[in-house]
Length: 128
Image 1 (cartoon, helix red, strand yellow):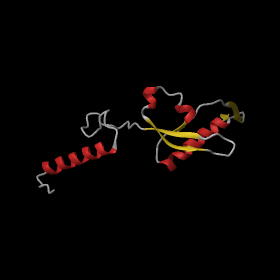
Image 2: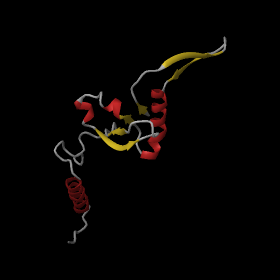
Image 3: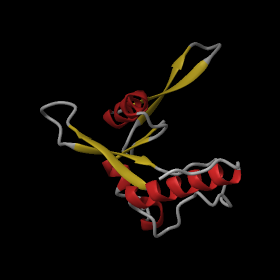
Image 4: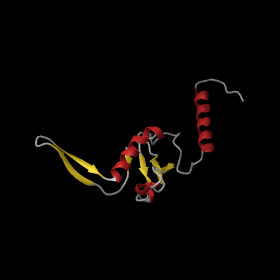
């Protein structure tokens, strides 16, 4: 999915039997571009910088910038962000980092400690 903010013109297209809504604007095109780019960035959601700037601080702290792009020479560069929140998080999982763990070294050490615990619990001996 892609999220962007801006204006759009809504119009009805179709026949007297079936009418569909259509939305036209450069902002709709940006949203479609964001949505089509999620696979290239390996994320399920991309946010444009204008959309990101409207987020509350509580929501923005879960976002990270993945790129800064310029789609044409006539456009200003725009940041691309993603929302790093896993809806499948097991909140009681002891491996889930606390709010104060923000660097890869601490997470790596936590993973190594957990692997040692699993190895020790299975009865295998640990070698240094």
